[in-house]
Length: 320
Image (cartoon, rainbow, N blue to C red; front, side, top):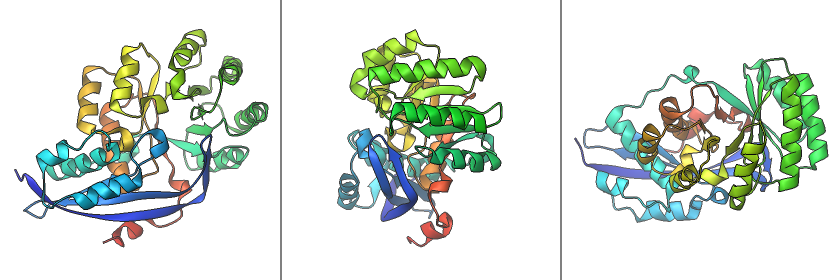
């Protein structure tokens, strides 16, 4: 087996059709790096570095500096030794290595995706459009506008959708304890009639784990952790602290996919794999992991195609 690989990379910048608005603010451009490894037989493996620094990954500048410092060819041992402070780089290089060694294939229709809805009342129009495209699970960004207004939108959203739909509410850590309780109480009332709310995602900031754990015991509505489990060390920590709820895994910034796989095979968890607004290169690798490791009864969070306008395949080919 080849142990050394020629390495090249290209930077990209993609503009969202409309800014992604969360409790962190507005996100207008997705910046990342596409990498390519080639072995001595000409076999190619692709990977993608797509950081989200406000989630705890490295910045794009750090990833770019790392790529520029690599002396090509790069060895398999060097790839597996990429430090954990560069989790998006770990994911990209190991994904490219895996593609060369194991010929990654995935049957995308086997995985149900949840469609991402924008914050505010724009969700009402988007939900109808995505439902017509076949989506049955939706994730809606909350904690962006006043709670009472968002709850009013939630009721209108539910009334506009047919029975059998699942809805996830993603606060990105933007709520306080009082507003989280208000949301949980509202969702419990809704579920008594409709059974539509699947979970609330990361209602409180990362430093409020004890409060989040307590709420998970006090309410029947499930809570998912996202920012609190942004990498493997964080996931293992909250696992040992007794978290029995849902874990959202953003594979593209999580770190080493092989180490993640090793842990989840030893300790199966209720995991939902989710997008980081990567291109099809990173998405293929993330979905390959999701197919093997995610909870089988939950849609993966990769319904984000409607946030970009360009022909992705043609656009990626133009990088080289």
